[in-house]
Image 1 (cartoon, rainbow, N blue to C red):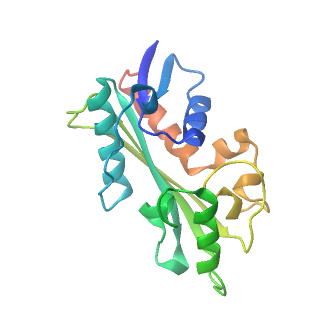
Image 2: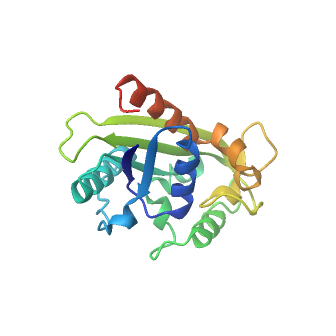
Length: 198
């Protein structure tokens, strides 16, 4: 059984990753188990921030690391909140405050197109010169009001393209099949298999 540290303390993400990796001989441990200090996310892109987080976790634990940097891009807001999605309404981070601020900024907007973006980075160790980088998106629209009790983050205000439900109205299996993170993880699993990691 291989152990990989997940460079997040977000309980929702930890749960999603554990589900996605359940069929593989891998133990996924959140970095909080190792008291890893939070990385300073000062990159300007999802890719840069995911690399920063993966390197930080690998360096602190000596284990291979997977980091996720994800967020929501809204066309009418020129791509905001983007890399600032988790702290859109300020710190400390609060999901409901974030999506409420987004709904307020979307008042009166005709174009409600949006997408979740996810970048996953796998680093064998902190000095890995060739991290595996996988990116995927999930298209949809911003609702006028929140719907659903499942999921996390902006899920209650994200209307899934081609569906009449919010991301927070999908069950876990449906969400993993459609979501930006589920798709990015499928790409990552393919690469990890090809490279003999799993």
